[in-house]
Amino acid sequence: MPTVSSEELAAAAGVNSAKLRKDFSYLGSYGTRGVGYDVEYLVYQISRELGLTQDWPVVIVGIGNLGAALANYGGFASRGFRVAALIDADPAMAGKPVAGMPVQHTDDLEKIISENGVSIGVIATPAGAAQQVCDRLVAAGVTSILNFAPTVLSVPEGVDVRKVDLSIELQILAFHEQRKAGEEAAVAEAAAVVVPPVRPAANGRKGPDGDMPAVMPA
Amino acid sequence: MPTVSSEELAAAAGVNSAKLRKDFSYLGSYGTRGVGYDVEYLVYQISRELGLTQDWPVVIVGIGNLGAALANYGGFASRGFRVAALIDADPAMAGKPVAGMPVQHTDDLEKIISENGVSIGVIATPAGAAQQVCDRLVAAGVTSILNFAPTVLSVPEGVDVRKVDLSIELQILAFHEQRKAGEEAAVAEAAAVVVPPVRPAANGRKGPDGDMPAVMPA
DNA sequence: GACTGTGAAAGGGTTCACAGCT
DNA sequence: AGCTGTGAACCCTTTCACAGTC
Image (cartoon, rainbow over all chains, first blue to last red; front, side, top):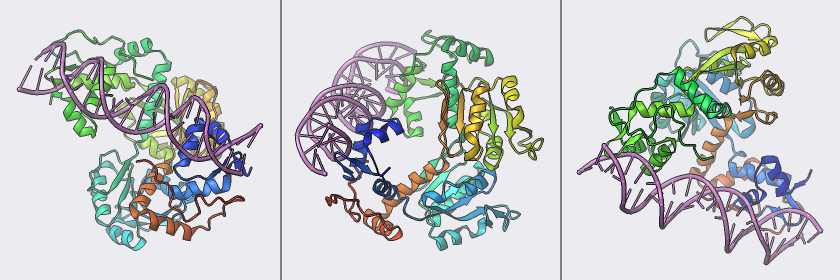
């Protein structure tokens, strides 16, 4: 299939074709009227715009289950990411191979960063260690951090942080699950599970505990 | 601190206080004018609305590094999620304790689901096994699925699927990193790394390969 | 005096609809 | 005839601003 129309792509992605065309138009005029978009050319242009054609060395700090899972994750290499080093604070981990690569000790963090020209760091440590690791990464020159630890990191201006909370997606599912189950039943059940704190002081009886809360938009 | 103002919460969350008040207002009038929001009461109301006061049994299928990381993840329990079972297809894994819980074999999947009243399943298997696991989960009565495998799952109407792609967040960071580095330099580097496919056929020279693409909005 | 709750204004993103090109 | 690229219309979300309440 050498070319695709915006209509076909939109159907596949589940969006409106006009939106897709407008989005593409921000990248340039890469389509051909009356024909569509050349697939190979479009893929290249989008890849380039997203930075997928570049090589991004990253370090993963904290090689527990999650760190190891990330190190083994196949999706990284195919999108231009190269795991430059695995770093852990546990001396017992040092030298152990994970995903075919020896784990290095935190002591060498700064050296590793500068020698590999790393600008993106992944933190998969326990919450307690995260801020400290973050500070060292930033001091060593890292300007983008992906944080899997359940803490909010504070960083200086100019450094990007993205936090991944593995339980948030579950929460979203549970929220919809609750809706599926039906509002009344769910509220009654919730009320039975937890003894709700009584409304403090002045109780204007605007939203008593058993009430059905106002429906959130869409 | 028994009460908070929308201003304080907004500052902490990094959003506008009017937005915060309007959002809260969809849940009901839980604040007190001149005073603010009662912290305990507000937490309870939000928890209830999000379904955090309910008990959600979940199963995790695929106990590799990622599955184990999820099983050990502390954030689940505190948000009402209870890991009801860990399931893996590898007979060698069966019975092994992970996060203080014996791994069970895939053969018993249907039994586990129905006995525990599980409605949410987490798939952390390799891509190849994901759809098959998904089908079995759905057939057994699961109506929400959190998918960590790098595949698009197809499910019948009425079943929710959320896909977590661990590399997407990295990609977003890389995209901003590329911007920080400066448009020209990045494009030049990209062009050097990959030989771009030539523009097919009619080349109207609207966006030649070295061109700076139109800037995307914000 | 302080702070919520909300109508109205502003802003941003999406969709329509069609001119323009192949 | 077919499909892109895009101005204009539309709609939804955010912010302003203030009346209402404690």
